[in-house]
Image 1 (cartoon, rainbow, N blue to C red):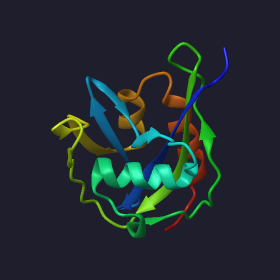
Image 2 (cartoon, one colour):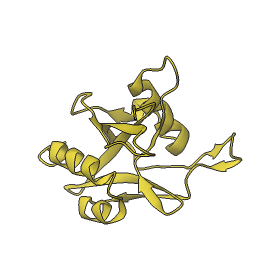
Image 3 (cartoon, rainbow, N blue to C red):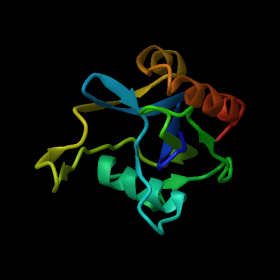
Length: 144
């Protein structure tokens, strides 16, 4: 069955006291990085930036793509018809706000947190773990 839906998101990290922290969002007991469906005609990075702002209130100018614009796709899910494509960016802020979605009348996510790699590894599911591992390999030797 062909992939018919692509979501795009960003693994958002920040450095504090020589430790890297990953921003995870939780909905219905499932932890993931901010992401959303790529709309027709929209570039995937633009989708990812839009979704981050819609879901966390972190603005595009608060993100630095220190590792370039390389991305990693999740394995297919939802019956093999959907993938999520993730970029990596460092946040200039640790402030996160879960705005109310106009469509839902409530925030899209129930909670959020900044987690170390080990903490994040224990939170995310099997679909997201390879993305977390890929991002950690990219960032772990960065000094900024």
